[in-house]
Image (cartoon, rainbow, N blue to C red; front, side):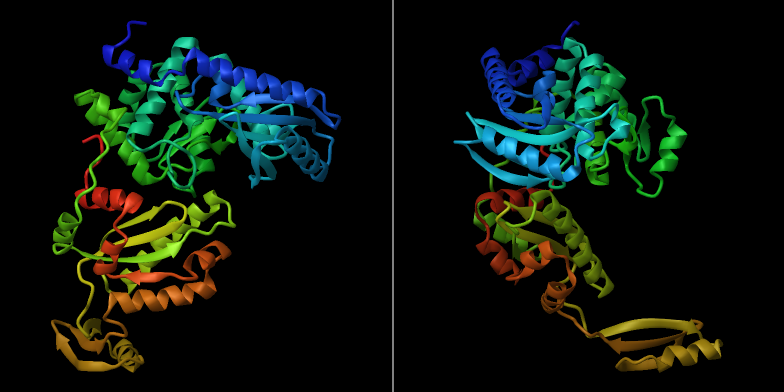
Length: 456
């Protein structure tokens, strides 16, 4: 292909070196040989993921390895055997048990982040016994579909998504996974074609691989996904299920801006400088911010925690609105040690009187019921226009006190991860938000207040 000079420049920076590739291959070969010598009920080792397909980015040192077992083996034995073999392979190296649909082992070997997952040998992805059984078929499908030239195109797309902060299927990012990016290239052939297609996309877009768009829309109509990418390996799965509406819109915006003015900053955005504290103080005089500071639970799988943190952010936002506080913006930051939920309001305090508009004055029955409700009436009832109006006393006028009460209530009502998170939670005034202004949170708050995308 005739390569655009900008793309050549990017590829030069993101393509793994021969030394990196050889090191990957050598380690996988060593692990495969070690597994062959171990007695057990396993069949063989499958190397999956972008490194196995040659679509990974330079510096990505993740190796996804699957110990394959025959499907007749009971699930409990699959887990026991898989963990035993993986732990043997990790002997002498740092490792931990992690959980997906069933437990697996992950850790570090010779500078690589290695995951060793037990999986069944099945005839197709649709016949999976657990979600991980699909992965070898993803690998096989993409190795058949992607040419060497398209692997470079996939790398460009991945770096673009990474540059605009819309890459990764985990619930921390709510973005597009690498597999989804590769399927874009299978569909649109090149990076540039994909960007052009992306620029025209709208919520509800379907990328289909022969199963039928109408079937896909019907299958996923209740979930309201912004983007549906039918998994060619399992037609009942949306590859883009983790993608949030916000991230989808960010991808569309970035694609349109890139087409108007291509620039390397879309691939490698300049890191914004953290504002000095005085500038933050000055900005906070123009805004009304309040926050909840909490701890990131260390005993719960990270991805599960992120899902609950995002749900909790929305829950608090809804509670504020239900109590008449207007939320103009909210945000969530965590370094997986500390968590800060941030809320920007039009006012941190409300007046005590709240105007309540009732039924039509001539509607005697409903007016009676309206006036019989238990509440402290400050003024009224009176007729305004054609309706009954009263003014009542608000239960809570302080956003700070409202959040304190709500946080305590959630210590009882929420799931384990959020209860652990909120155990020592504090409500932060703007003064206390400033005390947290350091390291990662300082970078986050600068970006939040700056209100600009890195690629703009």
